[in-house]
Image 1 (cartoon, rainbow, N blue to C red):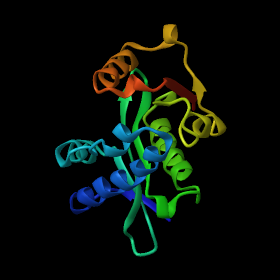
Image 2: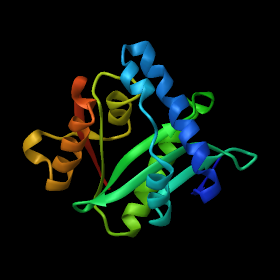
Image 3: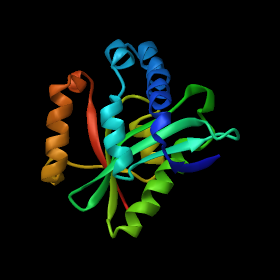
Length: 168
């Protein structure tokens, strides 16, 4: 498994990975999440051009997972991590997060942050095993408050969510 920047030609494949990774939410009674459209090619390209869209590529150099991130208030905020179900449970998400942590350290950032569902096994419980800790509402930075507000406006607050942080 190799982690590298995404190429422009791979952006449609990232959207396919996102759709496949979202499908298991249907089994949890979260069909709105399963049916949610992936980031647009324009959004993916914005992350890619900023150098913040990384893929995990298989032995044939084809993406099987990806991560989007951006600096927010002194931390690298993980906007999205998606692993295709056929590549799940192989440590690929963990490797992408480690790669993001390395890039954040290089930039002098102090933490990784993310927002996630609290009751989805492969969300908050998974990130807790990787060292992320829930943040109290009072501890959210202005940028994280904006992200949470945008998520709420998108309807993600139909299910319990949390901001999490891992110090670097």
